[in-house]
Length: 122
Image 1 (cartoon, rainbow, N blue to C red):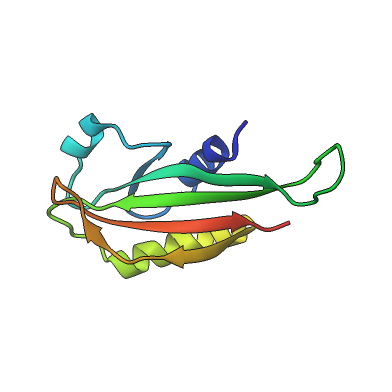
Image 2 (image 1 turned 60 degrees about the vertical axis):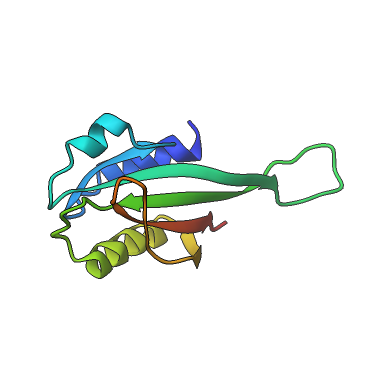
């Protein structure tokens, strides 16, 4: 199973308040249309997988980086700071370190979104 599917399943089973669904790779447009004011959708994407050790014929360990895109509804009733802290804390407990974050932005459909990058700890 890829890291994207693994993290999406972990998030879906986490019971984090307001998390409607975590999707691997992208959020379907049909889900964005039906999103309620107190629900948040996530997508989990793989950014990069590269070998940790170089110079041998076999690479047995890989450095995995993922991106979590958080999509809030247009009529948002969710405390974004609390929700984002819940996601970061949950993934930290699952051996992921938070990398950079470029801040919130508004997509063409007027949803507030934010992207978080994580690297799996070894």
